[in-house]
Length: 460
View 1 (spheres, rainbow, N blue to C red):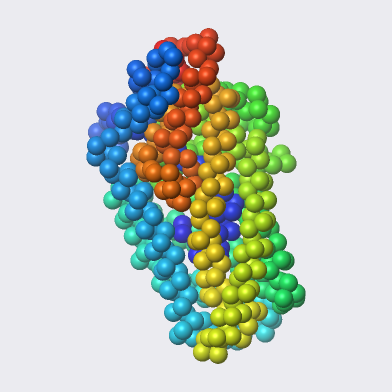
View 2 (spheres, rainbow, N blue to C red):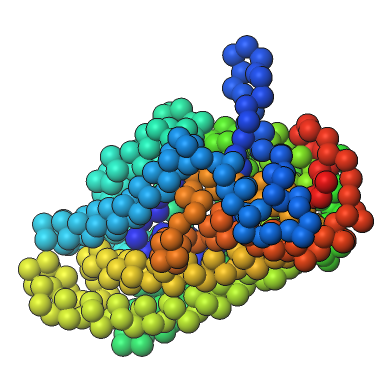
């Protein structure tokens, strides 16, 4: 789902799930069954040497993904840079079109005819605005969300399935957006010049609300959750959870394979609602060592309070963003308000302009927001290494980035466009950790079965 403008940033503030996948070798499928792409399990000889040369081992892992596979992932991710730009420009263009044509002011007039209650008019306006933007941006959404994903073999959804999921996401955005904007415009009418302080509080409150209800109420709209049936996986994951003080009593799986082959998981909730969830791709494609590595990373986010820390970060960013929005809005309305028939900041007809200004701020702040989340991802990687003791499994899973993300970008490219560390950085971190823990790893050495959901060895 691609949310629209301001609502998109509220959803982003709640933090996304953390997808990981890896370079895979196809398993021979039964007739008519899609092959399961097992995550590559070999440890290159360079990663088994003593002493361990970190750079040499890192390069050996990266060389597993080369030729057409590397070119394909690089092309997909680099194309995403342009997708971000075009998404931003299209939203600005739609906002300008709605204002310049006075279609926005007509939607405001419709809202006033529907209800005389001023507090409800922004919600009525929002329904019209959301539908208008949804229709105008639908061709771009279809290309990005369906055709482009299939072009790079990253989606398992039929077109009807994609439309269904897009529609569900739109309905959620419509409902939550109505609530958020009703509250925001109530604040604008009440406090006027100081609205940016209280408005930022409203935005932050809804971001927290989304983070809280997401795992229990929103994710089940798209996927079915059930307890993990593989008892070996369940016990390994719960053992990790107990060792790190995570109050979970079960592990759940969800059917993400209907959407993608990527593996993902998350640990979420608080006040007795903590839930550990992993997708069915993780069970199908990974062995126990790789599952432990992924789950330890997710537990790191939970134990290190990353969602809460990100909310504190947004508590600094949002007031500054809203203060700038107030300044820019007033000046633009002073210059163009009469032509657009926008009366002032508390006029719902100005919503496209307000969203466009806020969207511009967040677009400019993309490297800052990416750096914040990238730092948290690195902290979670370090936590996983220290908890699971699986550096080679970590490197193998990190190669997943080679399915949909450029593995070895330049430094500036990573700063501007990556909200996770690059595959090269993550593998290098795992190999550096391994070089410092060779003795402990040898003490824990086990045999290396080859099937899914089995143990693996970090050192041979």
